[in-house]
Length: 409
Image 1 (cartoon, one colour):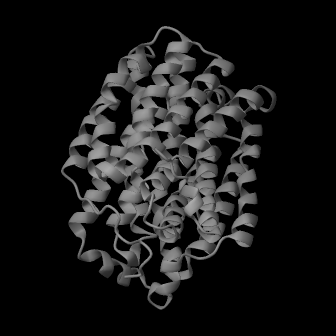
Image 2 (spheres, rainbow, N blue to C red):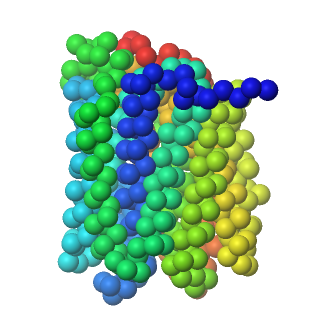
Image 3 (cartoon, one colour):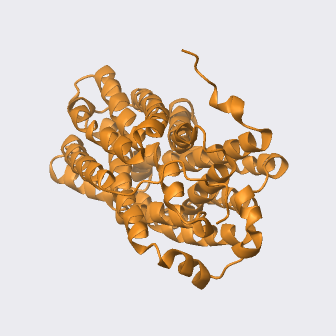
């Protein structure tokens, strides 16, 4: 059987738009996960505990809906391309500022500002890419685009492995300013979304006008928020404290923790592309439900393995399923969204999900620390519950597979 190359069917502008969206999301996640890997070290430097530093994750996630609204509204008015450039520069500056924080309070303030910038990137980038790409192979490109988050995690793991012992957490945040260079590629090579250009006169809307576009789809909007709450609980609950779990409960050092994280992200990357592509055949709802339910049999190996090799295998299998479900998200949310608010609604729903689960890391840390640092207990129970609820919500939800996203109305 002949296997086609999805990229061979893309024009130059389509490929460049996809690269920009994928790179932006990857570098955004890269900067987010540099903080995740540094939690234990930051706690030591500021003479506090893991729970106190993990509040930085909460603040980042809590501010992301505000960023989704702000940058999404600007993208509806002024176009996806220019606002994406502003967005990338914003989160890179916040990451650099984090490197020079003189206290934990200041660092947490910078992480909140980083969350504001991070909140805008996904919605704008996904709209730019999916409005530019053809419907053919949308599931594949959705899966690969979402796994920009995983690529960012993988890059952060590599920096942690090879640089952390030499430059410390502050040096890692300085490295995290490099994403600003992406702006030069976007400015030179990326064109504006055809759908935005086609409806440019209608895109300069007020907040009230955009609310009018959404008002007739309230049940749909609520569904998108609820399903993203489930998704973010599953993702952040399985990822954000996993390096800390390996370091604190099992005493693994930089090298072993980074190696497991690298294998974890390879599984996630495979899962996003595999299930994203599968959703083009099974449909978005069924694919999400399938991947979520397959999380359950992965929990024992993921949380209760006895050796680094088995932890790596468990982490690979877990993220194969977690990010497999997530690989469907960009296509699913953009297909469901009304064209007039496509840059703002998917991202806002996504980030409201993050807001609802923004206390996941402190919550898990609190459970673990109250049970003699038993992170395995905290992680396994929260992930199991999140996976079951996600499968139920997805199965009984909406479907709009392969709707035309290049039209402005």
